[in-house]
Image (cartoon, rainbow, N blue to C red; front, side):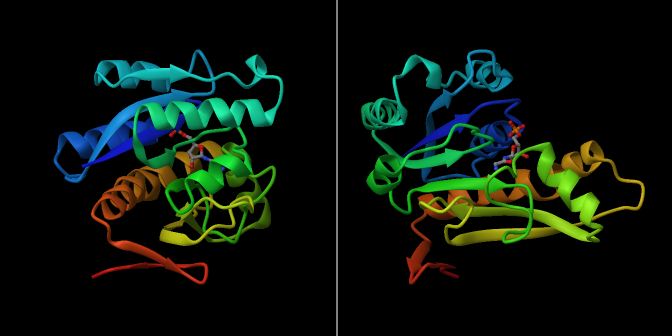
Length: 208
Ligand code: GAR
């Protein structure tokens, strides 16, 4: 059984999808051991408490620099003996020391089909605003490993979602979550905990 840490900053609907998947037995080899928030008032914390999952708050402003923040994060992950780190709407930049310590053990959900609409500045609603502005007809979500390049790590799962002519950033965000993110993230976590994902030369493969 692998201990999972879910890192959040906001509403936590992706955390909820993981909690629901675990309750339904869809992550048989993983257990959400703690939820770490970069915001003290994130609604995600309420979701964790309701599911009786231990919560931790790690505010960037309480640390002198990124290195100290990263050290505190690593200490927390070690304390909970974490084997998989899931970024579920985590809006604080994770430094190289964390990435190195948990190489190919940190996954992130991004609300577009990478390599479109990703990288610095592309987070949350901004991603959907950019997709609508560009006029693409299909978008989606990606779950990928985190490496030192923003949204540049090996891609694990992707799912496409159609854009409708009357979409607003908000309606599109909601549909991408419902149709793609909430399905992909628990599936990727389960695959990882089953030991089914391998990475070679920057490419992730899933064992049948
Ligand atoms: C999700 O749409 C997630 O893909 C996005 O933030 C939202 C968090 O929602 N993440 C990023 O944009 C990362 N670059 P949630 O708190 O309800 O899960």
